[in-house]
Amino acid sequence: MARMSPEERRAAIVAATRAVMARRGIAGTTVRDVAAELGTSSGLIHHYYASMDDLLAEAFEQAARADLVEVLEGLSQGGNAVERLAIFFDTYDRGIRDGSGDFGMQIWLDAWAEASRRPALRRTSRRLNEEWQRALADVIGQGVDDGVMQCDDPDASAWRILSLLDGLILQVVAHGDVLSREQADAWSRDAAERELRLRPGALSRAVSVGGG
Amino acid sequence: MARMSPEERRAAIVAATRAVMARRGIAGTTVRDVAAELGTSSGLIHHYYASMDDLLAEAFEQAARADLVEVLEGLSQGGNAVERLAIFFDTYDRGIRDGSGDFGMQIWLDAWAEASRRPALRRTSRRLNEEWQRALADVIGQGVDDGVMQCDDPDASAWRILSLLDGLILQVVAHGDVLSREQADAWSRDAAERELRLRPGALSRAVSVGGG
DNA sequence: GACCCTATTGCGCAGTTGTCCAATAGGACT
DNA sequence: AGTCCTATTGGACAACTGCGCAATAGGGTC
Image (cartoon, rainbow over all chains, first blue to last red; front, side, top):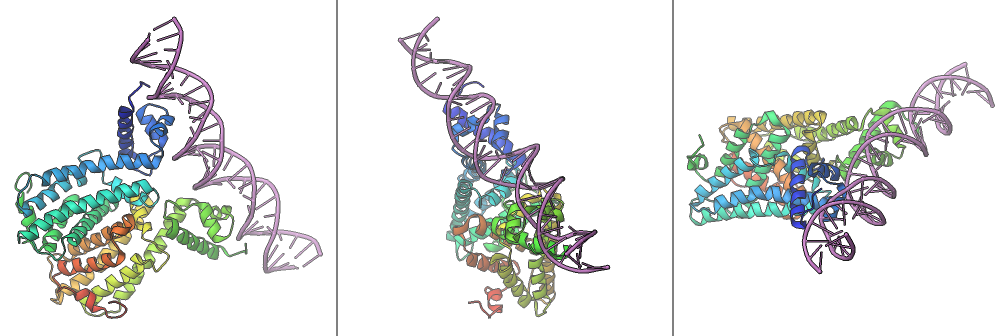
């Protein structure tokens, strides 16, 4: 295949890995699959990535970070705490649950399950998870400071809300037809309103564009 | 190894499979692992189970149902709605999160991740999931009827609480040291109290034995 | 003890997988 | 054109996996 600079090649390898991952899941992504997608030999992959674990972690990191960055950008636009929290949920739903990128929800389940077997993937998954938590806890902290939200421990509330979001992903992916995405979206907002002592509907009403 | 009747042998094979699954996860359970655990040859397993998929599905079903049955038995002892809800959380924590049985939390992640690819496993997983939901919704319905709990939709509240429990399993298993089991246990109760408009501490105080 | 049924063995097979490495080829510079 | 660096090749390798089969051994019955 055509020669590339190391930077270009590494990027191409990760892109191909993401494509295969989206199709076959993390556990089903092999060196040979990536090589075929890339149109090169399998040896080339190991010339740039020491192990398959490293490559999978890198590909997962890039794909997952895209969603996180989208949320962080939304939050950085400012506004009051309730508006920002509504933006958080909106962007989360669009980016992750609707799978706007190359990244289906299934990948999250794979990442969580594989984390126990692949050290690099576990580290990546945990780091991203903590960034999500920090972003959400920040918004909650603002709301508490402004007196529009009530909770004893913004960190704990953020963990609870994130755990619920993860659990809802689970329900939607693994048990499909018993829970629709729309229901999951609405329920997560309801639970957040209750968790933070907001008035019912505060989160869904705060965003008027595009919604219902 | 000692000769056994087909029924005994099948039961022994499933028991050994459950033991290995608890240690290595579903994806990490191989024929040879089970044979070693059982103390027999690997050929014997295939003499009783047509495929490894069948064996894994059977073992998962039995192990998962054991936890559900434990909770159902606890609930059947009666009591008022708050007491029964406390029993639900207690038994859940002990059975699933503490892994008092042979059933590690990792198995749930594996099962959920594999559900999209393995039809038999998906059916089993979804059926059990619905039974969990029904059990919890039943308790909540009782609480609403008795006027000690408030929620618009017991079914939806049950789904939310179960999703949170699933999400917390996720956090504990996949991201280990950022969230302890004790915290997860306490947070799930806090969230349930908020979801059902119980007074704070109602669930943790309802059980005095063993707790703190 | 001889017989027979079958539970059990243990190795072989074909297919994976990740990893490694000597050989090759592409392209920039003299 | 010749030289050299390195990106790339493609197959070998060992360790796996699920699976199948001819051979074996264990324990009842006569």
